[in-house]
Figure 1 (cartoon, rainbow, N blue to C red):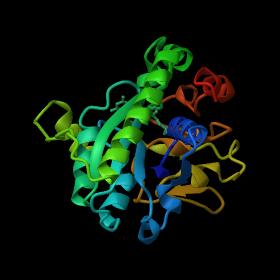
Figure 2: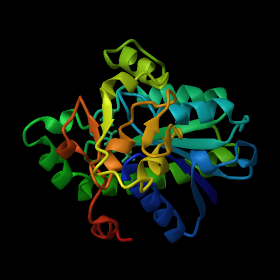
Figure 3: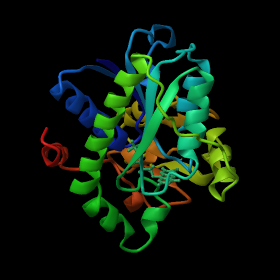
Length: 273
Ligand SMILES: Cc1cc2nc3c(=O)[nH]c(=O)nc-3n(C[C@H](O)[C@H](O)[C@H](O)COP(=O)(O)O)c2cc1C
């Protein structure tokens, strides 16, 4: 089976998880391509037997540029797809928002999965003990095994859909819940205010360009200092990834940053990769 995984990742959790998915698929003899949405050419997405659309959860929504990409994508009528998130533990309406977008493009959404990973939101990382807790516990061996089982189920459903067998698909109705307004607000790129006022500690910034490189919407430009355009979606990738902690925010302390999962090799080993 030919599988395409599309993903975005601000601090590496979704990058790690989708790489694990790719390795699992290849181990089973499938052919798997994996790329970031921003590297993919929307007109060249045809020709796969199964699609994975992956994103981090940001305020109960998929990342806004992921939704923009899906809105512009050509129709992939009747093609099986699944949704994959990493989040700190509560995806809220994110799977429903994503599924509705995919169904509008004609895809058959087979299911969704979220892997709990450490929280990359510096505001919650301020709570005493929380950062250590998430960083040391997640993902667990159990959650990684569940991810592997979910993938096997998606592949088996995709075979049936491609063979023209009718399968029962989840509904993904957008019911009113407490996470709905927050999710819809974030989906429209409304998180920028949460970043507070940013300031660059000029004596620490060496213009390495990491902030511009990790920004999923190219909102950072480097001249004699990083500047942030109005395209910013408030994902904290620049703050979290700055190797010198030179980006300051009025809403967080420099020590609240999170730059991604550590010891990835041992995590791959936990699922036999
Ligand atoms: C602004 C912001 C909002 C977030 N909102 C949620 C949320 O609503 N629910 C949740 O479980 N995790 C939330 N998180 C945590 C991220 O989803 C989680 O850390 C994710 O694994 C990050 O993926 P990445 O490393 O691929 O960017 C949020 C993180 C940020 C920065």
